[in-house]
Each structure stands twice: as C-alpha cells, then as structure tokens.
Length: 78
Image (cartoon, rainbow, N blue to C red; front, top):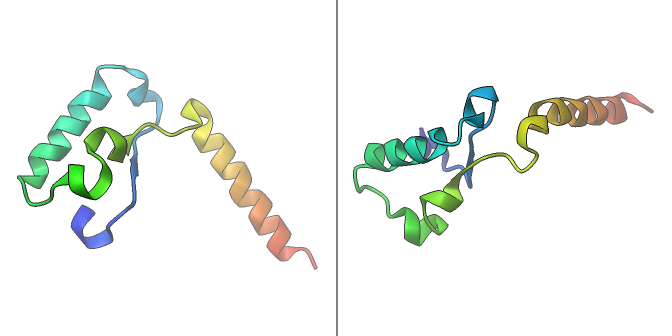
C-alpha cells in the first residue's frame, strides 16, 4: 500500500495506540515489511519521523470530523 499511494506520513491513532509499547512495535513491523526495498532514512528522515502518532492525540478523530463538517457547511453556504 505504501508503494502504491506514497503517503508523506503515516499516522497511527485511536484508543489502542494509547499503549506506549505499541508504536515501536508497529514501526519495527513496518520496516520488516519493507524488506529493505526502500531506505526510509533517505526518503523520510527515518521510520520514527514517518510512522507517527497524530499531533492532536486522542482528539484527532473528533476534531477531524468537526473540520470536515465545517468545510462541508462552508461549501454549501451561498
């Protein structure tokens, strides 16, 4: 999926990501899945800067939904 879509960053959020030991495990599995095909250090500054938690933390989902609603309202308002 990474190679097909080329995202600038992967955000890992949600309640399960509140467990501090999980993000390093996700990063390690991600690097293993690349199997050396890409050098993340050269492309992105490393896996720690590429697979990250959302900047808004647990509020990312609700605030993102509010932002989408505000955009839809602004687009529908003459």
